[in-house]
Amino acid sequence: MEPTPIVFMILAMVVIWGSLLASTVFLATRPEVATWPPGGPTDEEDAALDDID
Image (cartoon, rainbow, N blue to C red):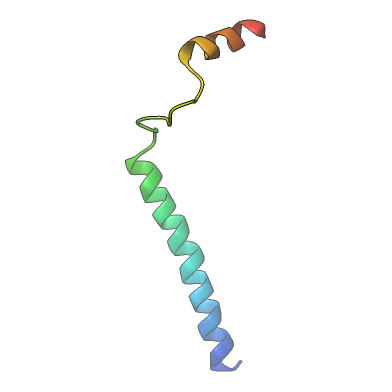
């Protein structure tokens, strides 16, 4: 194989595995959303939807 495809394959592998690692570390350090944006459902709305089922 020529060196160019090997370099691009290694670059693609680094991008994919690096993104996976970064996502895993981020989710491990911040597993829950601290605050939700305004306009989202409230606890009362969630409870009302749970009662429907």
